[in-house]
Length: 104
Length: 236
Image (tube, rainbow over all chains, first blue to last red; front, top):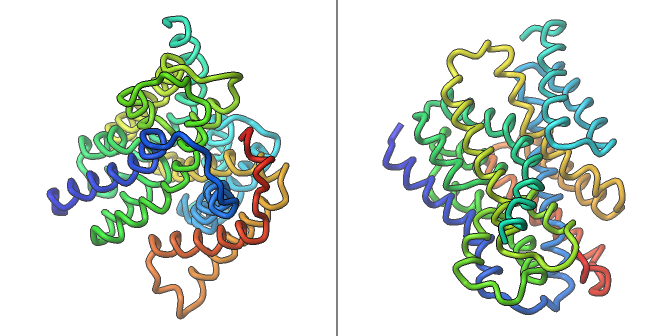
């Protein structure tokens, strides 16, 4: 792996991660008027995180069966509005435990 | 001043804790994918984001070009603009430019959510306290995962692969429960993501561009069908 290429890529990632965070805080003092732009921005986390989670979650553990079990538990815990730690750990432990029933 | 900082620190602690398993997984995946330990930690310290740096690092490991890596990371991170925009409405009026730039670095899905739940104006010491814990948690978790990488039993390390997605589900499911538009947008995005992935002709599209296309269609759909009325959003 080319370390120089990787380092530049990481710096670019850091830049495009920081800019969306900093620009509004640095320059914006008013409220956005267009309701379409506002709505578009409002829905960003849901479209992005939804598309990032499915279907990739099913391939995240190396075994489809354990991933489905982990997803199921995560959905239940999140639906009951448990904290991030509980949902993440609950999913990990479920995958780990069901891994003994469905070995890779 | 000191009291506000400590209060922020206290509020941010559960987030820092929640970041540990996820950033641990990141350190693990980055190092087992071939990155040096210092690079994994450097990514977490300089990016401080979940989805963006997972996706970006995956693309680096796949040998993708700068354009795809940068564009994908950017699209995934556009959501921070809304959060920062929303925060601008809540900051104490006299907060200086350098202080704003510093706070900006710590805006994440979770710190933003907690900050929005506070009453009244948000002070600089409070926000600094709020982001300090999660920043440390994210880096420490990454370092642990990167160092422990080789000595962790393989069935446990592969189980940790689900941590990031578990966190995403924990973020989007509670709001989806309360809002039909959000539920529909999530479903539409998932359907598009799966279509792009599994249809023979479309499956050649790389994972980064798949996220970009899905986001634009999913949100365009949401913004056109369920535009938010101004009165509803002023408090968000």
